Image (cartoon, rainbow, N blue to C red; front, side, top):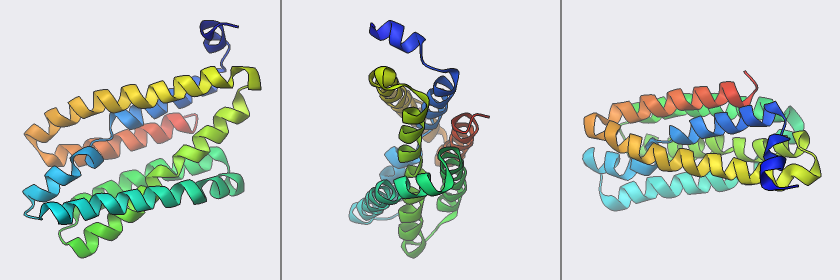
Length: 184
């Protein structure tokens, strides 16, 4: 089958997952702008860089543990926990005022926020027959990339107004991603 035919044959639940992924990545405002935010809060560039490193470490851990949690608690449950937890932690990060709080919050935020990736990939594998998975994963990555690209532009507009809008918008997008990613 052609790519177009393969995409047409994807089940509706997968398209809902793609929509949730798009919304989530469209609203990923805090991570790309965290260095700018922290430097405007009078932290040095190395201190801001360490906060980004904390996110990387937490995200790495989520990839290792995410599959285990997905198998134990279910795909939709992990996606919902990940997105709702990320929304709450994003708002906690917004209120954090010291590096002693910012660093661990960044670590835990990344861990929780990135748990959805193994769960979403497992859900695609569950819902799509093997012959349609290449198209499904291509569409999944496309939703991530388009959401990220558009989100950066939107995030820039929001940051120009107020960094607070970034945190609130990111949290709202996580909630929207949770709703769509778990099937509403």
